[in-house]
Image 1 (cartoon, rainbow, N blue to C red):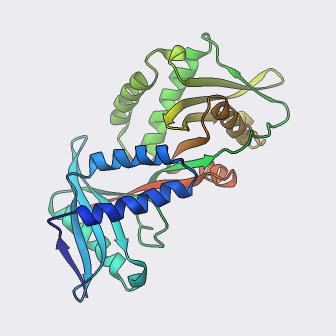
Image 2: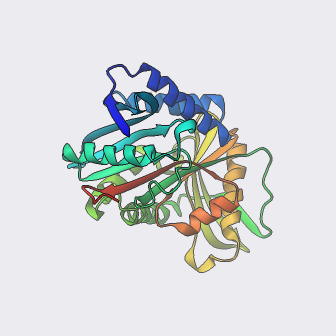
Image 3: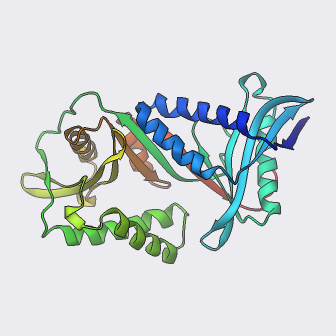
Length: 304
């Protein structure tokens, strides 16, 4: 029988949690400095987590960590960690821990439960909707550009139209992923863009690209260099709808990788929103591995 007991001292769990995260982040090619930066962000957010020991007949077999907090006026739960030791997997402890976490959060008023996965968990969270994935790849050599595709800097005249369309697309991504309502997504879009590119096209450490074929614009790109030590973050690599299906998605990736290397970074990272299977497939085929996958489910829900 699976048993749960709340820990009063979380030091051993945190050491184990950080060890697992460090291994996961390093496995996708992030450098040591970038890994430590990501761990610092994790440490800043775990102070309010409730951590329970998972046990079987008095023997510890793993941990589960949960928290409930306000999220834009709605109480939302989160499973911060759920890990069963390798020797004890496949005995139902994972499902029991998931059910315990769902019940714990629902009892405290959570109407939604989020989880951020950093590794394969089988079918345990198949019923949860995918909100988004963080993907990355280490770039060891310059990419081969697609014949005929040119990436050039965006001009000041092109920027306003691009800026407006990016904000609309961002709102659409958030709503499609089920993260926020349209009104909430618009407010988030306004806030995020104001923080990310306060100086517009002149904002330091950003690349704004236009992709062309034979002088015709086929897409755009926006990248933030030094997002993490040695890591460029691709906020947007976009191919216009009428030009899709021609292999230009790979050309956009190549342009992003070239800009990454030119800025002195060695890894490129993206977020792909849930519901965008085309982009997920492109990133997989291009060798971009999932660092984290965010999922959610409404609470309470029927036991399965």
